[in-house]
Picture 1: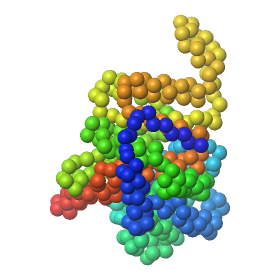
Picture 2: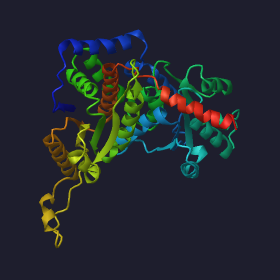
Picture 3: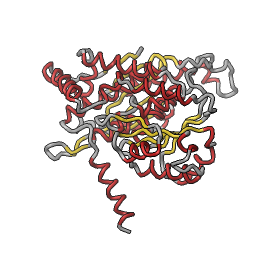
Picture 4: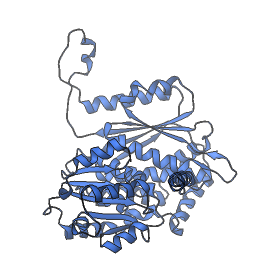
Amino acid sequence: MIKRELFFESEIDAAVKEEAYLALLEEKESGRVGYYDLPESEMLKRIEAFMDEYDFETRGIKNVVVIGIGGSSLGTRAVDELLAHTPERNGRNLVFMENVDPVEVQKNLEQIDFEESFFIAISKSGSTIETTSHLKLVIDHFDAPLESEKFRNHFAFVTDAGSPLDKLGEEISVPVFHIPENVGGRFSVLSAVGLLPLTLLGYDTRALLAGAKMLKDSFFDRQEDMLVEKAYYYASHADTFPINVLFAYGTPLRAFNAWYVQLWGESLGKVDASGNHVGMTPVGLIGSIDQHSFLQLLIEGPRDKTVTMIKVADFEVPVAIPDISLPHLEGTDYVNGVQFNTLLSAQCDATMESIKQQGIAVDRIEIGKLDTYNVGYMLFYYELLTSLCGHFLGIDTYNQPGVELGKRILKEKFVNQ
């Protein structure tokens, strides 16, 4: 169960609201935007058949190593960190080979036993420089030539059909799982990009898709007016409130915040048809930690932010504050015997009330518990919110010309040396 509340007035009229529903329906039915179809794709069946064929238990696979960056890794990391403490997790380690920071690269190599690891190289384009660089490193460090059984028995690729990585996989007989061409990397967590590693980790990925499908069906049945109203408010007030803050209460939400930052920033930071630079800067905070840092800026700083509070009603981890009175610290005894979950929830509510009292636009999302169904719902919620904001801003939500510019400049730095 997920509860949502808006504490501001959107002032959107019925015609504009209907236009938004129709715009996203057109994106879906035209086939231009494919993430809408992922909750009902057949990819999971293929992944489950692949797992049966490769018999990971017998082969003693203890590490799932994701070689990918950005949209190829952030969604998987977000889901895993949200659910890692739940009984679904099967005990396999999840390792990310993402950044080309040499300290991180060396640390990853030291913790990987090749024979106990299964590597998933993920790149939508099939030529992402960080991914291909890590791939070369693994081949060299573990003496696993492409043509060898050693390599083929420990690798799968996830990429677009026809990409360089896809062609390589076909040439050397490595399993390849395709990302739909009309699904961008930052919207791909419910494709093989996320489903393959998450299924290998034991998560109920069918429930993940079911949670996403529930919200998808509700939206296209015109039952998500609150979501449309929120997006309209953000877009219509983007000049006044150019910063969107996601204040999530619970450390397991940290990676979800990072996923949201990429989704929001890469989708909405654009130049519109009139040549205006538009978008909202995403900021991810974790409560209660950031009550002791960023909250001061929210309360007394510039009025240029909107805020979403996320709380988890029940983490299902029953740890209480001991009924102990410490000398000179008796003033803190009012929380003795209280569950840490209850304290965190109360802090979230108190922080939200303090923000509301400043007249700041705030809304709240309450997740009943952290399970795959609710996580799937949350992923699709933010994808829909992003698409709606893009519609109201009048931009192409799904391209990233600024990112491509940086890639071209990087290549020139090496090629033209």
